[in-house]
Length: 195
Image 1 (cartoon, helix red, strand yellow):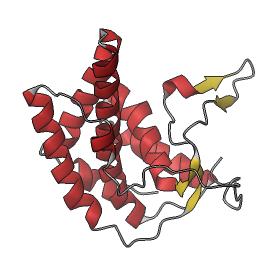
Image 2 (cartoon, helix red, strand yellow):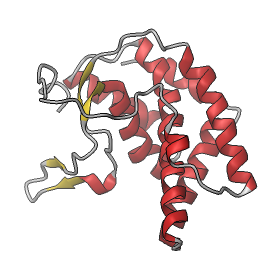
Image 3 (tube, helix red, strand yellow):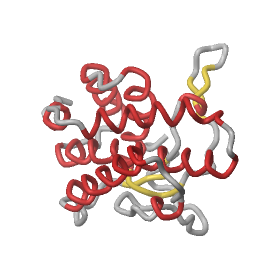
Image 4 (tube, rainbow, N blue to C red):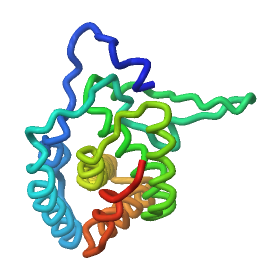
């Protein structure tokens, strides 16, 4: 998808949060339990430090899906993979879509499976060889950013509707965020992937 849409210029300009924009935390702000509030504050501080170093870096752009998760991927009878729900798609950094897919498809379901993530990145790069060391450095902060976005979105949605159908999704995001923010060597594992 990214490779095929690289030269495509859509009409109009869809306003979306940039990868350096954390205003979604204000947009989705609601009453948090103390432990959630502390986790979000820690995550925001971590992001400010770890994304800031890449702020002047130029990354390859294309039309991205921006919401590649299990619910938006189908396999037809011939085992062809199909993407649905392009409501969030816009022209932006491809590495953001790659990070979203890894976070939603792998980290949320398998934890931090370094071998599976490396296999995903290697397969992607065979089809669309654009990932380099600078983008690998950007991946981990984008995992954290996506997790913060989804957690604040689900909490806001739950707070507005007052039903607990989102408890499972919130718990997954909390678990993922705690994992990503814990003291670990996950960042160095990603930076040292061979593509």
